Amino acid sequence: MPEQPEIAALAERLGERVAGRVLAGVAPLQFSALKTVVPGPQSLIGQPVAALGHRGKYLVFDFAGPRLLVHLSQGGRIDVEDPPKATRPKGAVVRFAFDGGPSILVKEYGTERKAGWWVLAPGDDGPLAVLGPEAGSPEADSLLLNGDDRRRIHTLLRDQRTVAGVGRGYADDILHRAGLSPYATLAGLGPSERAALVEAMRATLAEALAAERRRAGGLPAKLGDHFTVHGRAGLPCPRCGSDLRRVSYDSHEVAYCPACQTGGKVLADRRLSRLVR
Ligand SMILES: [Zn+2]
Image (tube, rainbow, N blue to C red; front, side, top):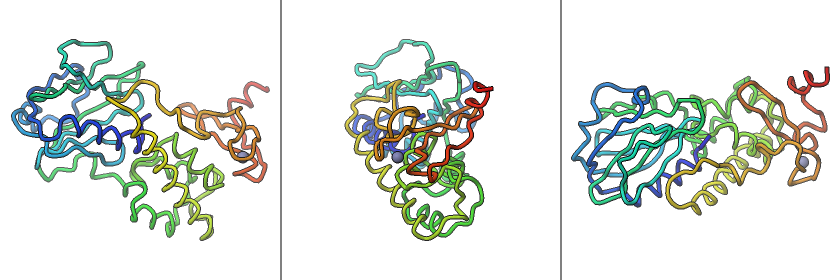
Protein backbone atom coordinates (compact mmCIF):
# COMPACT_ATOMS: atom_id res chain seq x y z
CA MET A 1 0.00 0.00 0.00
CA PRO A 2 1.32 3.45 -0.80
CA GLU A 3 2.05 5.34 2.43
CA GLN A 4 3.00 8.94 3.19
CA PRO A 5 6.35 9.00 1.31
CA GLU A 6 4.85 7.47 -1.85
CA ILE A 7 1.86 9.80 -1.78
CA ALA A 8 3.87 12.93 -0.89
CA ALA A 9 6.32 12.39 -3.75
CA LEU A 10 3.46 11.49 -6.10
CA ALA A 11 1.69 14.74 -5.18
CA GLU A 12 4.87 16.65 -6.04
CA ARG A 13 5.16 14.94 -9.43
CA LEU A 14 1.51 15.40 -10.30
CA GLY A 15 1.67 19.01 -9.13
CA GLU A 16 4.47 19.70 -11.58
CA ARG A 17 2.23 18.46 -14.40
CA VAL A 18 -1.22 19.83 -13.54
CA ALA A 19 -0.99 22.61 -10.92
CA GLY A 20 -2.29 25.80 -12.51
CA ARG A 21 -4.13 23.85 -15.20
CA VAL A 22 -7.89 23.88 -15.59
CA LEU A 23 -9.75 20.63 -14.95
CA ALA A 24 -11.29 19.83 -18.32
CA GLY A 25 -13.09 16.59 -17.63
CA VAL A 26 -13.87 13.89 -15.10
CA ALA A 27 -14.70 10.38 -16.28
CA PRO A 28 -15.92 8.06 -13.49
CA LEU A 29 -15.04 4.56 -14.72
CA GLN A 30 -16.06 2.56 -11.66
CA PHE A 31 -19.42 3.16 -10.06
CA SER A 32 -18.76 2.77 -6.35
CA ALA A 33 -15.44 4.61 -6.05
CA LEU A 34 -16.88 8.14 -5.74
CA LYS A 35 -17.66 8.53 -2.04
CA THR A 36 -19.52 11.86 -2.16
CA VAL A 37 -22.74 12.97 -3.90
CA VAL A 38 -22.78 16.74 -3.43
CA PRO A 39 -21.01 18.66 -4.82
CA GLY A 40 -20.84 16.62 -7.98
CA PRO A 41 -17.50 16.15 -9.73
CA GLN A 42 -18.72 18.10 -12.76
CA SER A 43 -18.83 21.20 -10.51
CA LEU A 44 -15.02 21.28 -10.57
CA ILE A 45 -14.76 21.37 -14.35
CA GLY A 46 -13.45 24.69 -15.59
CA GLN A 47 -11.65 25.41 -12.33
CA PRO A 48 -7.85 25.53 -12.10
CA VAL A 49 -5.92 23.28 -9.71
CA ALA A 50 -4.40 25.75 -7.25
CA ALA A 51 -2.13 23.19 -5.60
CA LEU A 52 -1.59 19.49 -5.25
CA GLY A 53 -0.60 18.02 -1.91
CA HIS A 54 -1.39 15.23 0.48
CA ARG A 55 -2.73 14.59 3.97
CA GLY A 56 -1.76 11.22 5.36
CA LYS A 57 -2.30 8.78 2.52
CA TYR A 58 -4.80 11.02 0.72
CA LEU A 59 -3.87 12.90 -2.45
CA VAL A 60 -5.40 16.38 -2.25
CA PHE A 61 -6.22 18.38 -5.39
CA ASP A 62 -6.91 21.88 -4.07
CA PHE A 63 -9.18 24.03 -6.23
CA ALA A 64 -8.82 27.09 -3.96
CA GLY A 65 -11.90 26.19 -1.95
CA PRO A 66 -13.34 22.91 -3.19
CA ARG A 67 -11.04 19.94 -2.94
CA LEU A 68 -10.78 16.61 -4.68
CA LEU A 69 -9.35 13.72 -2.68
CA VAL A 70 -8.01 10.40 -3.95
CA HIS A 71 -7.18 7.48 -1.65
CA LEU A 72 -5.38 4.57 -3.29
CA SER A 73 -5.91 2.09 -0.43
CA GLN A 74 -4.16 -1.25 -1.03
CA GLY A 75 -4.00 -1.72 -4.78
CA GLY A 76 -4.82 1.69 -6.19
CA ARG A 77 -2.26 3.21 -8.52
CA ILE A 78 -1.88 6.24 -10.81
CA ASP A 79 -1.02 6.54 -14.49
CA VAL A 80 0.02 9.89 -15.92
CA GLU A 81 -1.20 9.74 -19.52
CA ASP A 82 0.69 12.02 -21.84
CA PRO A 83 -0.80 12.35 -24.39
CA PRO A 84 -4.20 12.05 -22.68
CA LYS A 85 -6.18 8.85 -23.28
CA ALA A 86 -9.87 7.93 -23.45
CA THR A 87 -9.51 4.17 -23.00
CA ARG A 88 -11.06 2.11 -20.23
CA PRO A 89 -8.29 -0.20 -19.01
CA LYS A 90 -8.90 -3.09 -16.60
CA GLY A 91 -9.32 -1.82 -13.05
CA ALA A 92 -9.91 1.78 -14.14
CA VAL A 93 -11.45 3.88 -11.36
CA VAL A 94 -11.59 7.47 -12.62
CA ARG A 95 -9.78 9.68 -15.12
CA PHE A 96 -9.16 13.41 -14.75
CA ALA A 97 -8.37 15.53 -17.84
CA PHE A 98 -6.66 18.92 -17.76
CA ASP A 99 -6.47 21.69 -20.36
CA GLY A 100 -3.12 21.46 -22.11
CA GLY A 101 -1.81 18.79 -19.74
CA PRO A 102 -1.72 15.03 -19.28
CA SER A 103 -4.68 13.04 -18.02
CA ILE A 104 -4.45 11.31 -14.65
CA LEU A 105 -5.90 7.80 -14.43
CA VAL A 106 -6.65 6.19 -11.09
CA LYS A 107 -6.76 2.42 -11.46
CA GLU A 108 -6.71 -0.61 -9.26
CA TYR A 109 -4.70 -3.79 -9.28
CA GLY A 110 -5.97 -7.03 -7.85
CA THR A 111 -9.46 -7.86 -6.74
CA GLU A 112 -9.89 -5.55 -3.77
CA ARG A 113 -11.97 -2.62 -4.97
CA LYS A 114 -11.11 -0.01 -2.40
CA ALA A 115 -9.53 3.01 -4.05
CA GLY A 116 -11.86 5.95 -3.62
CA TRP A 117 -12.29 9.62 -4.40
CA TRP A 118 -14.19 12.49 -2.85
CA VAL A 119 -15.33 15.96 -3.96
CA LEU A 120 -15.46 18.30 -0.98
CA ALA A 121 -17.17 21.67 -0.71
CA PRO A 122 -15.10 24.55 0.70
CA GLY A 123 -14.54 24.05 4.41
CA ASP A 124 -15.59 20.38 4.36
CA ASP A 125 -12.77 18.11 5.53
CA GLY A 126 -14.62 14.91 4.64
CA PRO A 127 -12.55 11.86 5.60
CA LEU A 128 -9.61 14.10 6.53
CA ALA A 129 -11.53 15.26 9.63
CA VAL A 130 -10.86 12.01 11.51
CA LEU A 131 -7.13 11.82 10.76
CA GLY A 132 -4.58 12.14 13.53
CA PRO A 133 -1.60 14.48 13.21
CA GLU A 134 0.61 13.95 10.18
CA ALA A 135 3.45 11.47 10.73
CA GLY A 136 6.66 13.41 11.19
CA SER A 137 4.91 16.59 12.33
CA PRO A 138 5.66 18.19 15.71
CA GLU A 139 2.14 17.24 16.83
CA ALA A 140 2.72 13.57 16.02
CA ASP A 141 6.14 13.68 17.70
CA SER A 142 4.56 15.14 20.82
CA LEU A 143 1.97 12.38 20.87
CA LEU A 144 4.68 9.71 20.67
CA LEU A 145 6.82 11.43 23.32
CA ASN A 146 4.00 11.99 25.80
CA GLY A 147 1.10 9.65 24.96
CA ASP A 148 -0.05 6.79 27.16
CA ASP A 149 -1.78 4.66 24.51
CA ARG A 150 -1.84 1.02 25.60
CA ARG A 151 -2.28 -0.65 22.24
CA ARG A 152 0.60 -2.43 20.56
CA ILE A 153 2.84 0.20 19.02
CA HIS A 154 2.62 -1.39 15.57
CA THR A 155 -1.18 -1.10 15.74
CA LEU A 156 -0.98 2.49 16.96
CA LEU A 157 1.38 3.56 14.17
CA ARG A 158 -0.95 2.11 11.52
CA ASP A 159 -4.09 3.74 12.97
CA GLN A 160 -4.71 6.78 10.75
CA ARG A 161 -6.88 8.37 13.46
CA THR A 162 -3.85 8.39 15.78
CA VAL A 163 -0.99 9.26 13.40
CA ALA A 164 -1.72 9.76 9.69
CA GLY A 165 0.53 8.49 6.92
CA VAL A 166 2.17 5.29 8.19
CA GLY A 167 0.95 1.82 7.21
CA ARG A 168 2.17 -1.76 7.49
CA GLY A 169 5.37 -1.21 5.55
CA TYR A 170 6.95 1.77 7.25
CA ALA A 171 5.60 0.67 10.68
CA ASP A 172 7.87 -2.39 10.37
CA ASP A 173 10.84 -0.32 9.26
CA ILE A 174 10.34 2.41 11.88
CA LEU A 175 10.16 -0.09 14.77
CA HIS A 176 13.21 -1.97 13.49
CA ARG A 177 15.15 1.26 13.22
CA ALA A 178 14.08 2.26 16.74
CA GLY A 179 14.98 -1.20 18.12
CA LEU A 180 11.47 -1.62 19.53
CA SER A 181 9.29 -4.71 19.65
CA PRO A 182 6.14 -4.45 17.55
CA TYR A 183 4.35 -5.71 20.67
CA ALA A 184 5.62 -2.92 22.92
CA THR A 185 3.04 -0.36 24.02
CA LEU A 186 3.57 3.37 23.86
CA ALA A 187 2.59 3.63 27.54
CA GLY A 188 5.35 1.17 28.43
CA LEU A 189 8.18 3.05 26.67
CA GLY A 190 10.73 5.11 28.57
CA PRO A 191 11.95 8.55 27.47
CA SER A 192 14.96 7.26 25.51
CA GLU A 193 12.84 4.67 23.70
CA ARG A 194 10.27 7.32 22.81
CA ALA A 195 13.02 9.60 21.50
CA ALA A 196 14.37 6.69 19.44
CA LEU A 197 10.87 6.08 18.04
CA VAL A 198 10.45 9.72 16.99
CA GLU A 199 13.89 9.81 15.41
CA ALA A 200 13.29 6.49 13.63
CA MET A 201 10.02 7.77 12.21
CA ARG A 202 11.62 11.00 11.02
CA ALA A 203 14.61 9.25 9.42
CA THR A 204 12.62 6.39 7.88
CA LEU A 205 10.06 8.68 6.28
CA ALA A 206 12.73 11.14 5.10
CA GLU A 207 14.80 8.40 3.46
CA ALA A 208 11.71 6.92 1.86
CA LEU A 209 10.64 10.32 0.53
CA ALA A 210 14.10 10.84 -0.96
CA ALA A 211 13.85 7.43 -2.65
CA GLU A 212 10.32 8.11 -3.92
CA ARG A 213 11.45 11.44 -5.36
CA ARG A 214 13.62 9.46 -7.79
CA ARG A 215 10.50 8.06 -9.46
CA ALA A 216 9.01 9.60 -12.59
CA GLY A 217 5.41 9.60 -13.77
CA GLY A 218 2.59 8.07 -11.75
CA LEU A 219 2.72 5.27 -9.22
CA PRO A 220 3.44 1.75 -10.56
CA ALA A 221 2.06 -1.59 -9.37
CA LYS A 222 5.20 -2.67 -7.60
CA LEU A 223 6.18 -0.54 -4.62
CA GLY A 224 8.25 -1.05 -1.51
CA ASP A 225 11.56 -1.96 -3.10
CA HIS A 226 13.34 0.20 -0.54
CA PHE A 227 11.96 -1.33 2.66
CA THR A 228 14.66 -2.50 5.07
CA VAL A 229 12.71 -5.21 6.94
CA HIS A 230 9.09 -5.08 5.75
CA GLY A 231 8.28 -8.10 3.56
CA ARG A 232 11.76 -9.51 4.14
CA ALA A 233 11.15 -12.22 6.76
CA GLY A 234 13.64 -15.04 6.30
CA LEU A 235 16.30 -12.71 4.93
CA PRO A 236 19.19 -11.44 7.08
CA CYS A 237 18.65 -8.35 9.23
CA PRO A 238 20.49 -5.48 7.54
CA ARG A 239 21.87 -4.39 10.91
CA CYS A 240 22.91 -7.62 12.68
CA GLY A 241 22.62 -10.40 10.10
CA SER A 242 20.17 -12.54 12.10
CA ASP A 243 17.19 -13.97 10.27
CA LEU A 244 14.26 -11.56 10.17
CA ARG A 245 11.04 -13.15 11.46
CA ARG A 246 7.36 -12.55 10.88
CA VAL A 247 4.07 -12.61 12.72
CA SER A 248 1.25 -13.38 10.29
CA TYR A 249 -2.25 -11.99 10.42
CA ASP A 250 -5.13 -12.57 8.01
CA SER A 251 -4.58 -9.27 6.25
CA HIS A 252 -0.88 -8.59 6.73
CA GLU A 253 2.30 -9.69 8.39
CA VAL A 254 4.65 -7.93 10.77
CA ALA A 255 8.39 -8.32 10.10
CA TYR A 256 10.97 -7.82 12.84
CA CYS A 257 14.43 -8.84 14.00
CA PRO A 258 14.44 -10.81 17.27
CA ALA A 259 18.04 -9.81 18.02
CA CYS A 260 17.51 -6.09 17.41
CA GLN A 261 13.93 -5.69 18.64
CA THR A 262 12.69 -8.33 21.07
CA GLY A 263 15.75 -9.28 23.13
CA GLY A 264 16.10 -12.49 21.14
CA LYS A 265 12.51 -13.60 21.78
CA VAL A 266 10.68 -15.05 18.77
CA LEU A 267 7.08 -13.87 18.79
CA ALA A 268 4.41 -16.55 18.32
CA ASP A 269 3.24 -16.79 14.73
CA ARG A 270 -0.20 -18.32 14.23
CA ARG A 271 0.48 -19.41 10.68
CA LEU A 272 3.77 -21.04 11.64
CA SER A 273 2.10 -22.82 14.60
CA ARG A 274 -0.54 -24.22 12.24
CA LEU A 275 2.14 -25.55 9.93
CA VAL A 276 4.09 -27.14 12.75
CA ARG A 277 1.04 -28.78 14.23
ZN1 LIG B 1 18.93 -7.37 13.67
